Length: 263
Image (tube, rainbow, N blue to C red; front, side):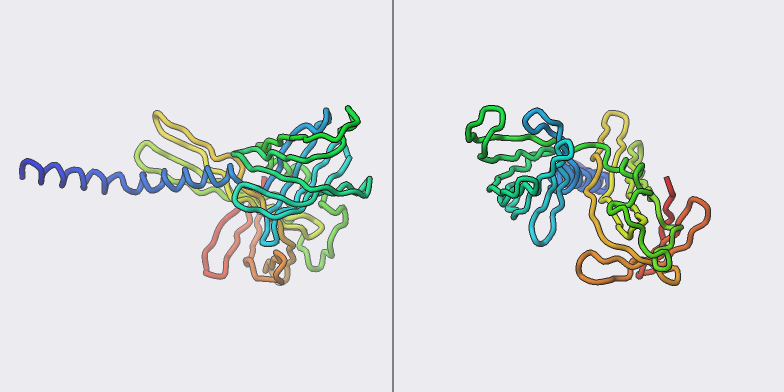
């Protein structure tokens, strides 16, 4: 076989050889971009000289967020159209509310309002930039402290589940290797959180890290070694579970099993 037909056949065979890795990199890139361009998560910024933390959550109903500026709380609630959000900013301390506009740009949320600037005493257009933090999984340090501060009924909330659990999946192709970590958090008050996953790895001349994934929230309960979750649409079966030492085996409805490690 010579000439054009030899070249095209060789090219196709080479493409087939590398296709799994190419598909993986394309999926990895898409996942990385999607994790960066997300309205969910924790962001830090500065509000008129005060360090502030913004925690956002996207749902079918729109977007809600809370800004904590040195214990001064501000609430945001609005709608999302792609990378822009508009809605209402509420100040429960002052009992006031004003419109806001926000733009999601990579790992930043740029918040724009028009309000009285306490430093100048004038109504001004103001812009605040919040950057996504990289330690979202570190909220595991506070796992024993439930978000509400009120422990749930132990009869329906097996305390053996309370804590932070990690599941790791690996992918290897030639000299390239990647690992993805997923996290789930069972809080003592019945709050359940789960991460989309964080993938890191590479090869001889390339490395990548998606950073912390999105974090979703639900309510959990347990009965007869089964876990049920409520994400706002009623209770749904999540998995059967078995714990031994620092390992938790979850068996899902389709029969798939995963072993999670407590960290």
